[in-house]
Image (cartoon, rainbow over all chains, first blue to last red; front, top):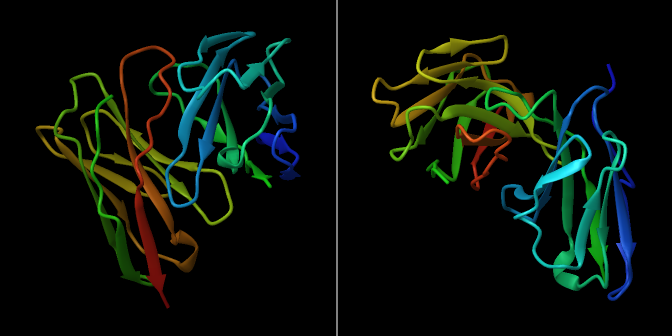
Length: 115
Length: 111
C-alpha cells in the first residue's frame, strides 16, 4: 500500500522567506510525527499529533516553526522568516496509534536549503 | 530520556553475519527497544523491536541481555543493501512518546 509521502522532495529558499512542507501519512494512522535531521546526525523530534491536535510540540526550536493537521490526516509544517540554520532534511512519520509498541513509518523527507 | 550508546561505525563482509551492539544501562522496566535503519537518502525504516525476550523476523534477530542493559541486532547474512545507519532507540511507557535518535552505527558492507 501507499507509504508516507512528503512534498516537495527538495526546497531551496532565501533567508527570511516563508516555507510550507507537506506530509501525507498512511491512511488511517492517527499519530503523526515531524522530525528534523541535520547532516551526519540522527533525526531530532519536532512535534507529534494525535488526530487533529498537537499532543507534544516540545521539540519545535522557536516560534518561527508551526505545524497543523486540521482534518487529522495531512499535516503541514510551516517555517516563517527562514534562517540558514534551518537547512536540514525534514522527516514525517506516522503510526496507527501512539502506543510504545507501534512502528513509525517514515517518509523520504523534504530537503530544505536556505540560502 | 533513556540514553543508548552505539559504536560510530562497523564493517562487514558480504554474506557474513553482523552483530550490532547497543548499550542502554539506564533502561527502565517498561521501555521497549526499537531498531531502525536509514539507507542513504531515505527516511528511517523499522527493523525490529522487543521488550525482554529475543525476537526474530524476516529482516533480523534481536538479542536482549537478561538484565536488559544491552541488546544486539543480528543480521544473519549481510548484503550490500544492508549498508545503512542503524539506530537503537528506547521507547518509554509514556503514551505517544516520540523516538529519541542517537547518531547510530554506520554499517559498511564490503563485497
